[in-house]
Structure formats: structure tokens, C-alpha cells
Image (cartoon, rainbow, N blue to C red; front, side, top):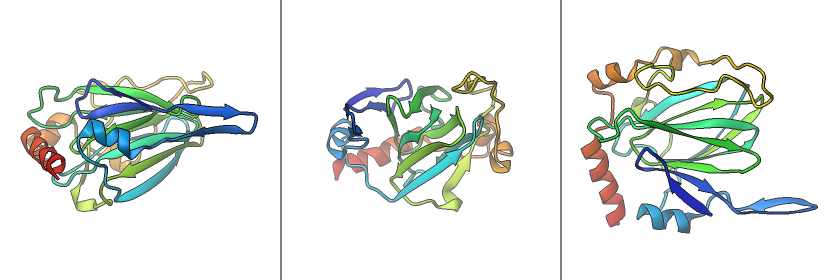
Length: 206
């Protein structure tokens, strides 16, 4: 399993080793030991989610209050998605920066994003199935969103599906009504860089 830190500090791309034979394929899509060595702490499992999305569906940008926030370990078991991490930590040296990883059923990569980061993805084919391991359970009062098409962030969303057909972004009503990054910051919704770093330091000290 190979880990590569993304351009957003606190997020990693994980590439597993796959073992194939005429029967199929086996791989370890999550391994606590290797990830914990890189993070300096273990990923506690509070909830596991699964979503199935049609081509063009965009989910996010979602994030949670810190503390405790919600770290996520994300992979695509079927189909393909462009998975995006956004630095929404107010005061961060890379505030507003984003990076993306193709998650699919070929390379079977995963993405880990630590507490305080924003997460989104775009489905590249019908039936794309995404699995998430989350450090904390879903808590509506602590969950927030930023509009995924906010030009201030400038995410370069795919315009073609996996089969080459054109894609049109399809958002939920909640995501379509989410504020832009600047408005979310002005409203005090964003995690603060210093508070996130303090929380992560506490995790590493345990």
C-alpha cells in the first residue's frame, strides 16, 4: 500500500497492491497500521457509509465542526468518481486550495482526509458506489456544506463521463443552496486552522 500526500495538507491518496488470478482480485483497501504510521494516530471508526450515484451527480463540498470533526477514508467499489478534497480551514496556508484523485474499480485507490477538510466527488458513470469510513457518526447540527460550483474555489469538475458522453452536474437541493466559501467564512461556519491543529495534536498524543 502506497501513500501520497495531496496538495492539501492532511489528505492522502492510498494505492493498494492488487493480487489477481483467474478467480478475480484480492486487495487490502484499508490497513490501519500503515495509515496510523503516517498520521501519528489511529483512525477510530464511528460510522461506515455507502452511496450509489448516477453519472453527473456531485456530492459535497461537505465538512464538520472541529472538534471533533469527521475524518474520512473513501474508496469507489464500483464505477468511477473524481474525489475532491478542499482546504476549508480558515487561516490555513493553503486555504481554498483543492486537489482531486480518480477513484475507480480499476486502480482501486482510496483517499484519506483528516478532520477539518472539505470533501466532494463527481460520479463518472451510473451506479458508481462509494464507501466511506468515518471517524465520527453523522451529526446534522455539526455538518455544513459549501457550493461545489463556487468559482472562488474553482474545482475543475469533469465534463465527460467514463464512456465519453457529456456530463451535467446534478446537485441535491441542500448542496445547491449551500453558500460559497467566502460567505461560509463570513458566517463563521468554517473550521479554524489553529483549532484543527490543536485537535490533531491531541489525537497524536494519545
